[in-house]
Image (cartoon, rainbow, N blue to C red; front, side, top):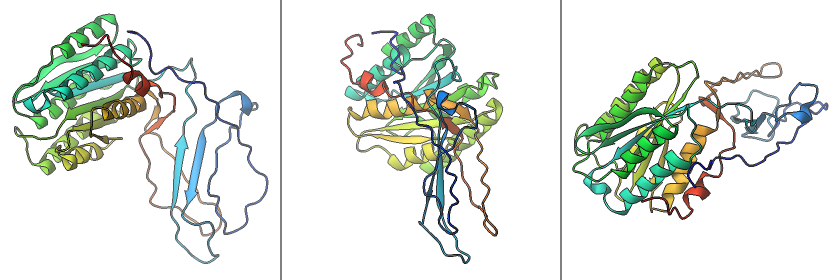
Length: 327
């Protein structure tokens, strides 16, 4: 099954929504709305969807403060539209605590990433591994046939070692992206950290570790000219959840934390993270909101840094298949 693209997009059609001509009564906010293309033939092209959910269904005519949430959903990516290439650094805990089934399943997951995740020749992967020592086992390497073979060889050679220098591994992984510099292609960049979070070498204090990693990501993002996401995967019931959650949410750009309670959780978590990376259609998106009506205004608007389509949905089922071609 090598070479099979597990991110093949299922056919999806987003309905076109006509803008109502009726005037909205004063004091009754719209709970949900969708944007409409101004093109002549709106039925011939996918639509960007804008959803607005209000805290209240109606407010008085007098002064009142109300919360609302706005979300944007990108249309399915067209077949002839090229997505931004990906630079992905897998930061792999090969300490003694990762022995046994955890190491076996992690290696199988990484093999699937290299072989069947739909990565293209202009996508690049780097592999940083750590126990008490930090190794750059594979610099950023294009995922053509030669690059896949190199990555696969490194993954097959992974074995658990000694203690856990988590900070050293994470900072080395970020440095790989920092050294890559800015790119004309607008690359999507991310670090995936696989660990139990039980740091006993290097920086051990969770707060100090989080500050160091967040600072490194901010510096690297500035040099690369775009955001860097950090995904953390916690293994085992005794993993340091607070540390890994803070690392992900404090990364400054679309960071996510996943709890791997059992080996069966790995496909779901990994597919969610990688699926998000391959479905990026725009980065550094800005949304401007203008209030309608005399005396109305908006404040406290927040936004995410990337706009994603929903076309990477089949990776989970691929991981759950019986992978007889993996060692």
